[in-house]
Image (cartoon, rainbow, N blue to C red; front, side, top):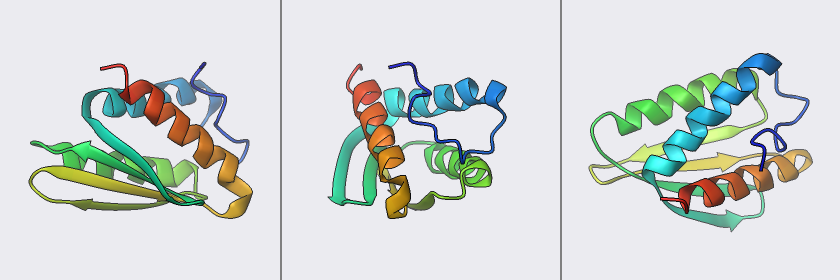
Length: 111
């Protein structure tokens, strides 16, 4: 998996910055991912292990991601133990959500 095969043309992040952003997601998945679920066809739920600064890290990352990939809708909920990240898309971006789910699962399972 080259890390960029799921990034759609609608992403406005400059091409040179895309590998860096993917690396940020990969680091989050590798360090914190506990579970990936697909409760609806157009929604992926990522459950991340909580800890000091994790919620803020997730919120900051999804804030930047929303700036370049406005087709994502992110909802972050957290408590002391977990940070839950729900990622939704419209049907036209279902393949992008599939790619994100595959990436999270692959990277998260490597720890």
